Length: 64
Image (cartoon, rainbow, N blue to C red):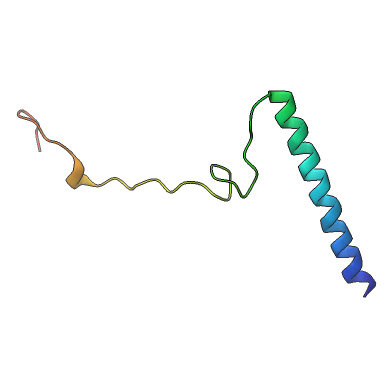
């Protein structure tokens, strides 16, 4: 039981350290920085459309 409590306490402390560092960095840069789970960050990247050759517009003189 002590190990479970210690792990939960460690996770909680890590959360506060991460959020404090994140807020401090946002204030230093004076702009919004997305959190790990927000759109545009490491774990939640917007999936880009793969290249589709059928979408290419060909013109006269193209060597295809």
